[in-house]
Length: 389
Image 1 (cartoon, rainbow, N blue to C red):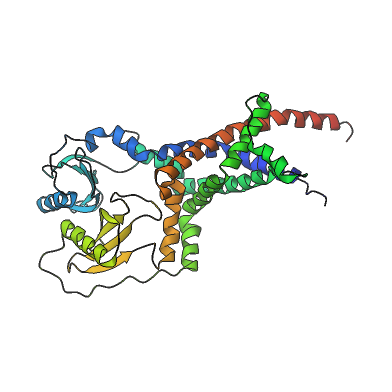
Image 2: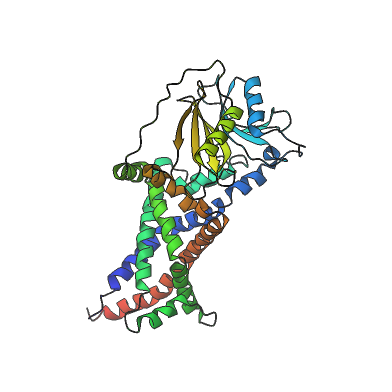
């Protein structure tokens, strides 16, 4: 059989890559940094996160209950439950008397007193307080809002197509197939520099083909989430209706400590092995959500936490937000972030995504070099043919 001409695919791979490379390299480097976003934020803002260790500190939920009772002007939105003894409790909150948006929406509570020891406004800023949010927004939208998000989505599509074409171009045209293809997976440091750069370009793309494809696919899904991915999930899987609570209201609203205790009881009754890791508050429905995770710390291993929702007025269990049991719509939605960030499998997959980001940046460098090196011969060939034409 006559082999399929590859010139059109080579040309498409070349120009898709050249068009996407500037923003792709930027996304790759910022994405690698985002793998370490929590330690970076804690290091930059140690004066907010750290405090002197407290001997036998009270549970976080009890401390936040005390804060909420003493400061009714603040409406708690979320906070983690598992915190080291030398760390303050980061609480996202909104002021009830500032509906337009306060200058502060994250408080850091002292472990001993429950009083705010620091505060900041969550959002991108050219300062250490908002540096990690700035990094995230630059990676996601180029700080350009919806239009920046769409541009990065188009870059992701170009990257995905070019990446798959690149894989195809490594396949040998002549037999024996495996013997020929095996050479594309090897890198020799004894090669001439031009050959070394070409081989490095191939090796990076081949050895990391699966994680790079996953990151590229999820990039498209995240950047076109509301326009394409969420409607697709809704079309494929129907979201179950929200369960109404009909239990009578109690004299005293449910506390955060009470919600954690109720979540533990329900987990024990249903055989759930995961542990309470964080609290969220749904202000619109007046519900407290207890997020349960595999190790008791808030994470996005697998498809992320299971959430038990409790009605604040009646203390009754409202529903479980569970992507693992009977809710494929939620499972499809939840898959994006853990897979894209590498948090799906814990530290090992975070490291893999970190290395994939560095490899993508290297692909950009080697790709430009290979294009520039081969361009000389292409230009010379066109000039040589010009008189004949």
